[in-house]
Image (cartoon, rainbow, N blue to C red; front, side, top):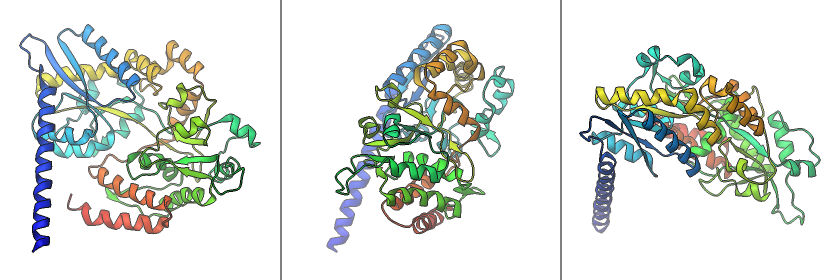
Length: 430
């Protein structure tokens, strides 16, 4: 009986915390909606974004300001949404107080579409005069069940940054092109001077954690082995190709030539910049490119095929009113334009989604000073993407747990089997 009352008290406390959280979210939403309906003949739109780091956010704010200056009848207010973003967004949708435009990741597409929170953009795209200027396969990446649900704000992909001086010191003259070459190079770059079993320098950093960055970082290896995690809209984690990709990460750990990041912080560059690791998986948005250390980039090494994964950010048109939706589409057109994409890409390091922006004199001058960007540009032709199905959040969470367990010593087969079984229990009840 005592346990029952203890459980009851805990349940009541959880409900109270939930209600408090929802109340805070609703207060936040109300604050975000202030000024949205001013009676001045101007359509005031709210745009929620979580653009980081702050210098990239500054570039975005500057471009939003330019739009407002050239569209006096439409004024977009850019509102930064801090962590955790998804609960705030879902609360807004359920509370019928969504933003007009949402900047987010495409992996949430299925969830938003199921809720009826976003609008398909196919009809608009067919009439969009700049359609031919946008990289075509980006639109395909954003399609779900035959419909386009968002437009790309930016794109990029993952490569491997490395320290040339550390390569030179280890006598390495060529960058690895295959998994086996990567494994051997990582061994050569691992230095344990006093033989105490604690290397002062590791060949590679791998991300510890179960959240999306870990899944994202592992995805090029999955794609390079010809694997998948979804078949016919259902989880498929136990295929041999996925096992092989996870086994490769474990091999790097068993070799002692990779070290793990702090939990859920695999994107941080401190160990790379300090020289504690010689190679790190990341993209052109990284602070490494703004640091003073020596660095270069090589494409993701291949297993059965050359592959990487896209890092695409999108804009959703939220379901509001016809008048507001038409005004919001004007902003989406602006984002896809050569003008926006040129300035945004030069300011942030992301690749332009507009072909004319890529070919522009300003961007070509920029990329000539940042030659590593050419590696990412060339990789776009072999870049795959993560699923955007409705259950992706649960799928990613289970997969992330399997990756983490494997890095900590569990067999890839067992870790993926456990994740698959967990998903099968909940998949049909979502």
